Image (tube, rainbow, N blue to C red; front, side):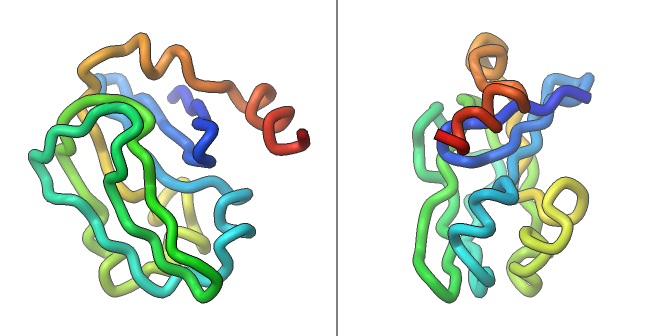
Length: 123
């Protein structure tokens, strides 16, 4: 299990089958506050790195989940439709947003590891 981080405050976990699971980091959750609504994309959507793929609404603001890698969305976490708070309460297990079948592993490789991400958010 390898986890990387994006400059858009997402965690990205690579699984052995070439899929990545994407969610938002604790830092992002602290900035957003309580989540009240998440608009998920459709399964089978093709996304490119940098695309807006989800709308996240909180008590403080609305923001977007940005695709950290390119590929095909193969799964969405439908539980977030009724329980958006899962993304805050259990981000790495129950609160993931989407699973993407990677089209270019080099995009994943170029993301930050945990140490680099910690440095990034402290700046």
